[in-house]
Image (cartoon, rainbow, N blue to C red; front, top):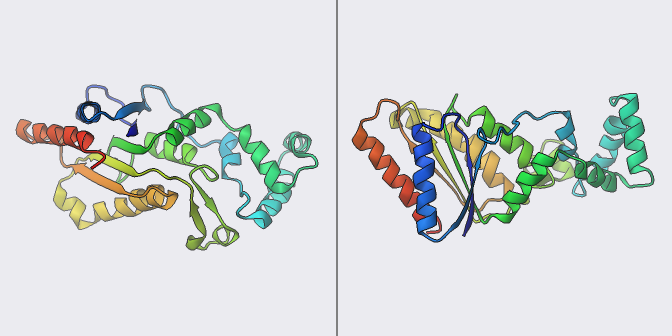
Length: 246
């Protein structure tokens, strides 16, 4: 299996990085093809900016919404005069859906490169610490900028009007594995933190985009853990890689 691992921790000497190394070693020993996106090392920009907005325009699954958005936001009063001129020149004689496609093709190159890597993978892995009951901003920003509308999911007209059932998954990956190191212990996660992360990350960020199976593993309270506990976590990280396709 071809596995893309998205890793987010700023310190290459961290325990989280040791987890990444053992997980990757397990993948290789099992014969999987592996690529790591070390977001901090490559200085990925996690901030969704105005240039990213075409990646969140409505598409052919909501043509009526696409027409309205193009008229009111892209070509209308909310756009600046120069932006309107450029947009009109680009999409002249095109339908709203065709215009959206053209605008998306002019989106950020770094996002397109990462989307190509995601599309070519069969499985995904995410390795990071837990910060503020969620992913680090670096990784959350990667999801927002890369797993976009039109690439990872789409929306029907009903979805644009607020119906959660109007979300259409576009990803076809067999599995996503999340490995998080934590500050707090397992009891804290059983008391509610884990459920909050399951809803926001496992479901909304991944399952709703079409990934067939999401597995979420925590290595609890690593900061003050003893050597035996840490070694056990590293051994499990290796097995999670080796048994990724199980």
